[in-house]
Image (cartoon, rainbow, N blue to C red; front, side):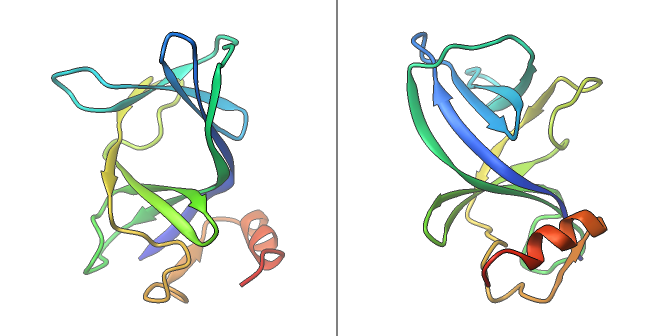
Length: 137
């Protein structure tokens, strides 16, 4: 089962100190790469001045359970071009106030606009149903 948890707009920016920041809607996450852990997202509340816009577009967060070709984790997908998406696995979900950090792992498992999963995606709320009905197929 694939469930859409959240959709919205994102931007990926970089500061003068070469720190990447991922904004999902208005929530900022520092995207850092400690040498021994791998990439992680960390909740941040500071105002950040960025130097370079790396990417911008739509994002989708999915919860995946019992799908034969997908990892049973939360998936984050960022639009990187027209009908092009980059997928990430979030083993402990998106960071929040209680859990400030989360690993983020790049994957080639893509759900968004993938005909293999069309019709298999459930919506978490009526609000998301309204948003998706107004998006082009």
